[in-house]
Length: 121
Image (cartoon, rainbow, N blue to C red; front, top):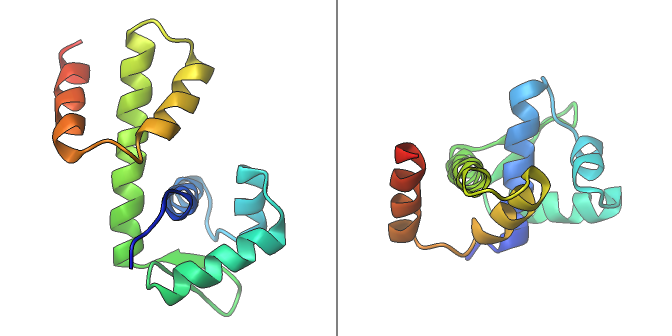
């Protein structure tokens, strides 16, 4: 089953939150994405059925290996694209927003080229 952009955003958000916080909950994701808790709950159930995450008895969201792989890939793309856009003179807020759009639609080949360019600047 194909994971869509929204699913990638949820996984990336859970991953980012887990870097700074022990025990990510649905309410944390809702606040970060500015979505309603019911919307988050529906998405989390779907991602859980697809094998991207688990929810433990304390309602902590735990990414599976499959979920971590996707989240790390999207997070890396986001960081590098944001960095590159800023280096090119784009303001930070616009760079963040544009990176979020681009990260989901960029081929691996093009991303590797952007990554090399970012490293050289």
